[in-house]
Image (tube, rainbow, N blue to C red; front, top):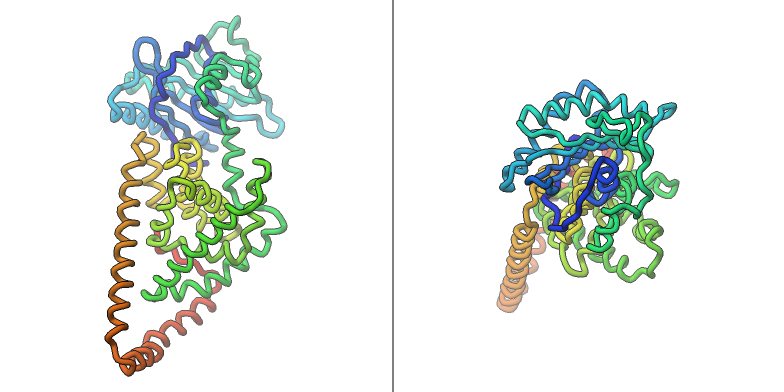
Length: 433
């Protein structure tokens, strides 16, 4: 279960009138940007005509014992979040989306989730916000938990409209809104690979950890690893850009084939350093944003086996680039997976909250642009000082300086750390959150 909820701000102004449970059920994927799986979705309604406002999604807790506390948390989050954006909801619509398990019928899913629907209605009512409608959607059928009229809401449920044939589908097509597939499909693009070809990836991560961790623990070595990581990441982005075009369905597999196990391991472990990761976050706009997103997705898929927690860094970067480029549904999915990999990953927590509250990513973009400009300025000044210094320094001083570097005491410490790292097996710095 993903315990980190996802929400969105109000939709763009588009006059669409939805009448009854059937049209509400058909509108759900267009409201979210994807087809939710195993999800609680709550939508705030504003004004006398029920204008759609904030939306919130959470994976359905597997244990019914969690349902009361989850319902209270979700209701409070949606109402308080709407108030922070300036308008308290007049009502709320609830969707429970889950396909049947083995040996289970869609109707049984609806009955099993009925206590959760009732608890959500009670939690909203406790905040003086009524639930206008509560729907269960399972196996492309829907039921209403609120409507007692069997003529429009029969006990066996009703079939959803064929995809693309509803009122909302027509309006979304006119407005250029796209549904990105199901939540399950979006998560699969970021999930660890399970193909035989990736069997050697854990060994490559082990080897890279043994080599990189001792260097990261040393101040100068850490700077070198950062430069190497970013340089390799840029080289991989260039390789992705120059690769021949392929069908969208094969794009991820093509990207995976262009990155070796060793290259993936080096960048994944290098990104565990917070400073390195923050510099990589500057690849957030323009032509490099698409390439960076492809790279972060590919690296997230390489965090296999015992290295699943390391996926938090590339997943967070993927979520940030998606949000920065206007793909809020993709951002929330990636950031939710990052928090599933490491619930305490601070950067993902902050981005997730900011995205959910409808903040403008331009604030963070300006900050990252400023930091990148300062780094370039510092780099130019260092080069200029180095050139001037070399022009006046005697050769004997240079030889003495080189000798002192080779014999500095820290080198022995570094060797001991290398041996210690190898003795302890898997490596990977968790210094950056």
